[in-house]
Image (cartoon, rainbow, N blue to C red; front, side, top):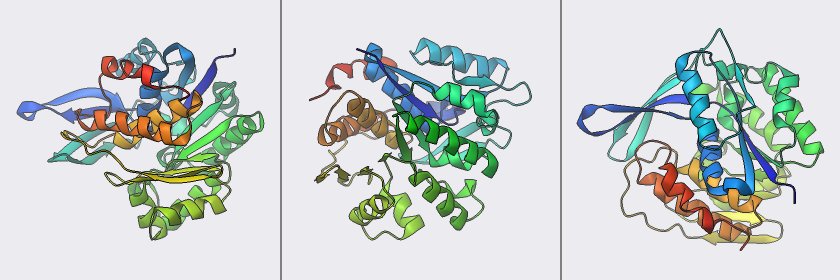
Length: 312
């Protein structure tokens, strides 16, 4: 049996996460990277997981690539840029709720779609390709069109395209520019994983069902709407449902919880699990990340959950 390939496209950044004593721990994070990293730990050898981005040639960039490879990721899609480095963000917490401070204007990832041939090669053989609204937002309009073309080519070869809108208004020139880009992306999306908070803010959706209806009208076959601690709504094929989100007892930091949900859901779907089971896996992994400072859980903890991911 051919091993399936799951690829995420986007930006990874240096992360400064608060720890005790007013200090910060440095790591690496970014929405699509968080998703593919967690998925790689869950999938192990049952599927290949790769990340497509662009980083610098400096030591911190090299350390990122080395750590990603050591954690089981295929890094052949990571390009190097001698003129730029990785962006950086700092997490500020108010209790468990987070806000972010970014330094990313000269991020090398903004050039990830500058070479169409390299981008298409990085996506070659992928069965599942994941991008986000942040992926779209950091690119120029011309580079975004090159990304769309690469996604269309891969989709035409049989891949399923996954999109988490993950709206960050500060990255866009206007709400209308955001809407325009999101609609263009939905035209080539097979699985959408929106957060209701983002959807109601951008589109005035009345409830998660309205989000599902709107995305289905754009031709998206599979829609799963996250809504924080509230139930998850979904429609896939002819199945529609609402699944309660378990109460999380101890929350340290909400950073990356949605990305972890995406990882649990997509890894499960890639291995054949039906949507309800995949949603529950996503909820379990999101709860683990909610109890962890920063955007990623412990590698050992996530790998210990791998046996729960399957086709049942």
